[in-house]
Image (cartoon, rainbow, N blue to C red; front, side):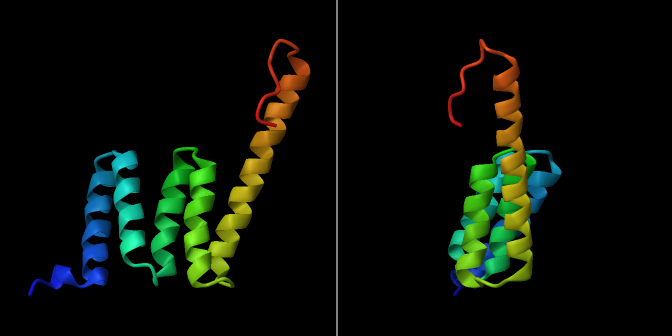
Length: 114
């Protein structure tokens, strides 16, 4: 029986592949591999932190918050997931505030999504 039959071994192999893909500059594919690895290894909260960081790196704050929520499902009081969530929420609030300022200073800009 292959060692990849074990979910944690499959997740580790995907994480290694994601690191190689990210090293080549393909963050989007690496993010997908990391998310798949996190889904396979559901009981490893730290597996969700890497996809959250990758989502944040490409500016996808809602996806980053979803990923960090995966880590918090495993360990609701985990320091690193809580710290990352606070940082993501801070960035999301700042982004929303910037949109409000831009909309207030440019009357031709619609205020959608606020």
